[in-house]
Image 1 (cartoon, helix red, strand yellow):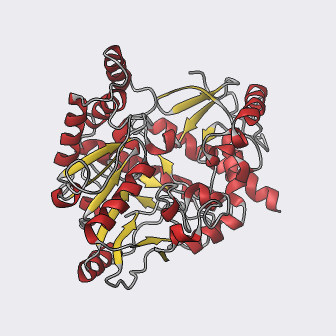
Image 2 (cartoon, one colour):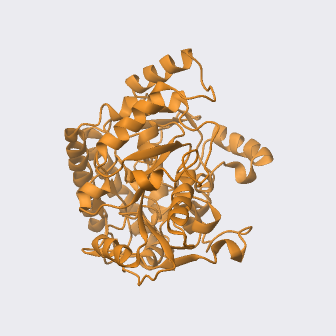
Image 3 (tube, rainbow, N blue to C red):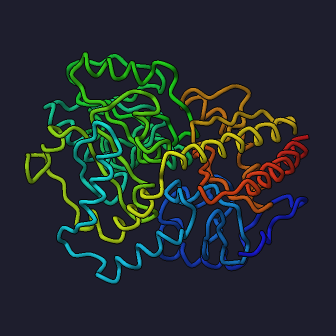
Length: 439
């Protein structure tokens, strides 16, 4: 791809190009809000989105020919970078034999074997097509196994858009300023208990499960406080409740064995997504054998999906996981650390308040004076509006961050040192522009 057509130091505001504006106008006539996922709308940013034409490695190109260094990376799914050669070849080979059969395939078995072999304690997995399906199924398993109804979640953690888990969710729910969703009756959330993140809640014998993002990545990035995950494990054990790690984002992103190895705490159930599908729709719920075998057809907990474990997604997932050796994670962690340090220094030098938290291979940018520890802190940082201006200034310079202060940034293995250095250089100019506009 060509160098960014929008990489202009002095440009004060990014606007979508004519082709993107036309597509958005057409989309609004046939798609609610013009997008198929709310955070793509750029509504909180005060403009309309760019439409992607193609992507390769660390970059995306929009339909107007503008190229951006991309830190969205399909919200973390593209850990190898966009359009990786080996992934494309694997998908093409699989497609030659057919795209869906409604019957089992060997690739499903192979992917399940890789997942179970990688994550200690995860003895069985069920493949599904989305993270929402995975978390919904995990809750159903927990309720079925325990005979209890209540589920504890944490404010600012997003576990998909199933009714019971939308309360005080992060990600797009937070971006739009919603407490939950219209269309969800009180009865659907009557057994959902919301607790503050990084605080161990008191549990009783009515709680079926505690579900948590081990590193919260849907209110920006909030790492677990020392003792938090350990405290959840102990509280669940005392109450006879199940601990569920939602690793749709962190799974196979922080480490080959997931957050359990990073933080030294093992849950009873896991959910995975993003990385394991190689950029195609695929997710999984996994856990101990006794819990997982409560699923139909072996047990009474029902779950099904026509396209679950489809051959294109499993081929893509296998191609990605085959290339994620331990050194890949060390390489990613090093790159993220250097990028985060550079961003923090560049933004602070402009006189703006900034926090750039890191959790191994994840980072985010908060415009805040002090570290963010929970959802309330994330909301305070988002309310000042500085992220919106910084996002637009970076986009005008050819760098694509997430269009929301509540999302995290993703570095891929395709991002080179020159990309990181250029990003920091451009961030310095963007931060100065934002600071000058405040004067």
